[in-house]
Length: 136
Length: 149
Image (tube, rainbow over all chains, first blue to last red; front, top):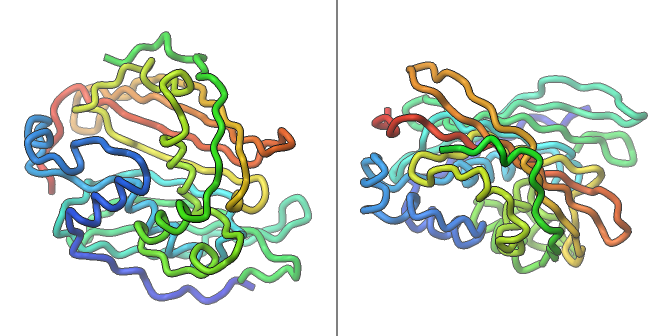
């Protein structure tokens, strides 16, 4: 049986400090995410958040729910851009429980939404059961 | 302008060590308080942690530049990580190689051509066993980005 779905992870308002901290941790130093002049030159009104930062929020929420060592697949699609000041809500649902290669698995669908209701990131993850066959 | 000739190009093999302090830093940068990353003496890495391969992948092992995507019009479209078992733990020394596997075009919903490029990175453990795979899809738009909604 899959553990009950935990409450959503709510993060924000996103600050430039959050963005810069993620950039330093991830190694992606693209100036479009912190350099005001560079971002404007590229046609954006301000620096924007990294899609991978929001992907990290979804991963944080999903592995708190189903187990950090039990994840087998994690896929995200970046949809809407995220800006400093945004408030982001990450959550998800069980899509399918099944057996594969003699192992109990669960597929979950994830979504990170902006305060506007717009979808920032969509995600799909697969977790496997532990040695007792329990999913978290 | 994206170069279709990049398909099939691989970078050199590179090493990546999964480090406990880096796992901790990454967990804190992604709002995690999970003891699996922050308290376990031998923590697994977070599902998107392998994006930090950028610290280990030198120019000769990164074929992405051959795609020649415009940094101002290039964006990350999709990202996938597959783990063939539990994600790598701190202390693991991985050997990795990146390959450009696809370049393709699509008409954007609001007009203009979008050019996508895909790079797959295989991660092998000390015994040469494939333990993880990263698949990055980037997109270049044919005109400047729209105003945010």
